[in-house]
Length: 429
Image 1 (cartoon, rainbow, N blue to C red):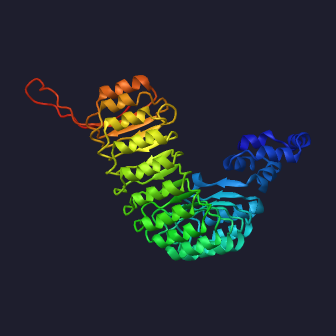
Image 2: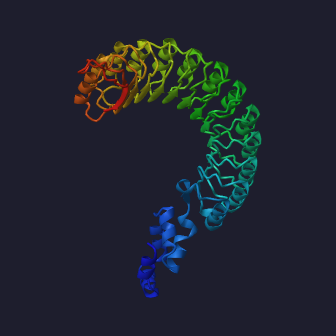
Image 3: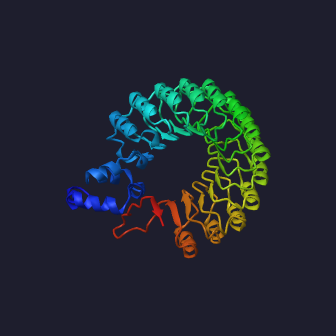
């Protein structure tokens, strides 16, 4: 709508529109428009400018698509326009936004509930101090990759944002157990905590979480390398509502964690323990027999597990949708057979990843034919899988995506005695 639209609406036209449609109805219509369309409508006429820029239309704003163009003054202007109407703002990836702009924002938008500052690398503890002072209704805050954030930020949030339910401080690697201790003492209603890449965290930090966050549903500890069984067992005992746990890369954990999850967290739906090489069939047996709501499991590089784990999952986990077994080199066709005959197979299982499982053959593909919900299967470097086997699978599951990587084929000699060179090839069928 640009100049053409301006020409379409004379003052008389506006008068007719305003007469036939009351302001409340026009505002309701404008409330369904996105940011770009609202800005275009604001240029059509004076009447539309007032309607488009009414604060009630700017309750939810996502500026990710404009991240390269957003500077601090833009955020300040938006905050002044929206004021107390704004409930949700995403500045994800807006590298030009700093503490000063966010202080103005916090002062003007005191009803903000959801704020995404993921990747806003200019911000420091000063931003969290502003949020603490002015934004007491804040519920969700994403500070991932804001690497200047320290324990001071968590202390400030604890003091001024008691309603906080979800916090993402992934890759904020200056945070230690002291910051976590301060946070949970003031924000005991936390339901989701993302601590991926917070490499200074130790078991003591988890003990604070387990003691003060009984409502916790989601916890991400990926690559928190210092975490051991002691810390995670405290989480299991204190957070019985836990539904999603990521401990991938926490290479010190053992079957004791799986036992604790099975005994204390029956609602668990998502478990990611990739590269946790000390986990065995014994632990997964206990888990499967007690956590019947499991939907997604990432067991990549859990190198000790065998078909026994798949047998237990096939019997006890009827809701399983996504299963990664990549680099689990002891898995065989027999384990896949049990999985294919299991309770989850016919209507639930959507993704299975079997990269680098050298004992898997075309027989496994035959066992998966009955998995009618299967959407994707990963078979990179499964040396015994053939194109013919994949083709047969697709006759039963025509919409499935199969990712495979085949060894080089040696062709017969060409005329003249020389041989052509054949490369390894990746296929997506």
